[in-house]
Amino acid sequence: MDSHEIIVRPLHTEKSVDDIRGANTYHFEVDARATKTQIRHAVEELFPGRRVADVRTTNVKGKRRRVRWRVGTTRSWKKAIVRLRPGDTIDIGY
Image (cartoon, rainbow, N blue to C red; front, side):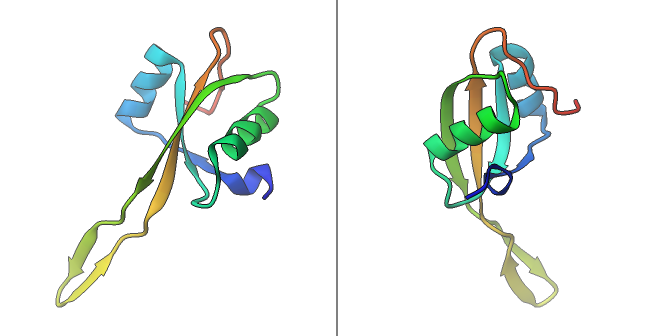
């Protein structure tokens, strides 16, 4: 897989912004088939000069939603929490 296919988008939530400021960790939505080592290499390739210290992943299950009489689910996706080495930062626009 290509690095652009592995990293889908950065996540912009209150928790992710607090983690950027406090713990130097960044949250990304990633491809569900990606492994931790693939995510590490993709971040280091997309943001040259940055070194990844730790990668944590979780599978987020889709929630059940109802619209009138039909029941469906939102999509399931995979989240990666990437911690960089001290002194490294990524400018992702917020």
